[in-house]
Image (cartoon, rainbow, N blue to C red; front, side):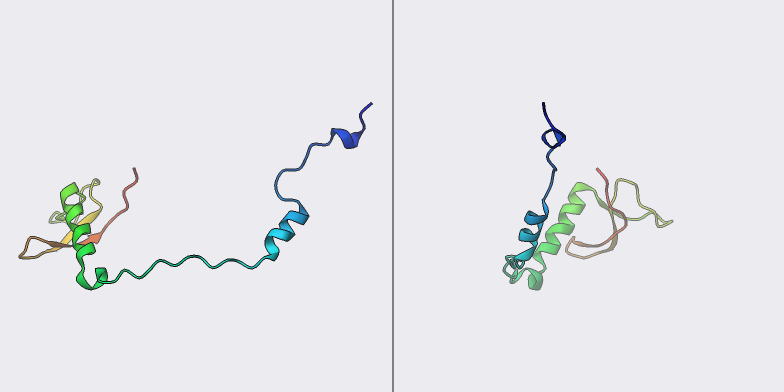
Length: 95
């Protein structure tokens, strides 16, 4: 006949010994990514981001009341002579 000890279900998760062993080692340093040289200086990544916003229609001119449609995530604050624009985030789009 089976005893109570035989009928016990195994515990899930870490046991005390495993938790102590896992916590005793020092944390390994995370690999660092190399600095993106030239991207911040040239602004090409920012220009590409704004251009993509304009193409997708996520950046629009605000109405005279200062409102933007719900489909827009950014409002255009200034248009430049070269066709680029400066934008400001107004909301996060939930898919």
